[in-house]
Length: 138
Image (cartoon, rainbow, N blue to C red; front, side):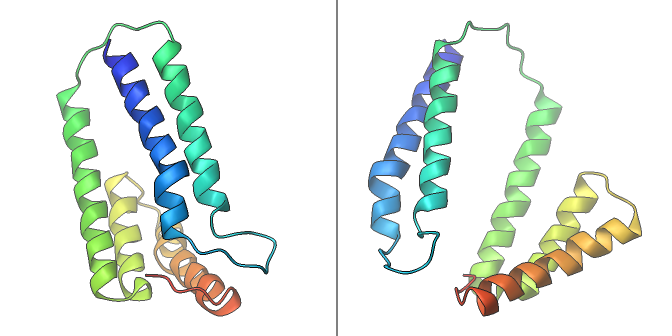
């Protein structure tokens, strides 16, 4: 029963994203090969399909794993704080620290990967989005 209710909730959120949220939050432009609503609409369709699959699938035996739930809540808290910080300051200042914290939390300890994930990728993303595509990051 929980799977079906969760599937229905995901379907409803995907439909709200597709029909209400995305049209209200994106602008219509007449240039470029990728419209601003393309990625959100694709994600909404994926959510609707995944929710449908969950709602009609055969229920499995479920057990609550509290340590994993606490870990997931911790990740959600870190990401929420990071998004709040990005709204207060700029992406380029917050993203490297957020990436580093998340990488350490998932257990990454190799310095080359930490350097690439916490410095190279956020700077590259910032450059591509803000200067090449001329779109603001927050």
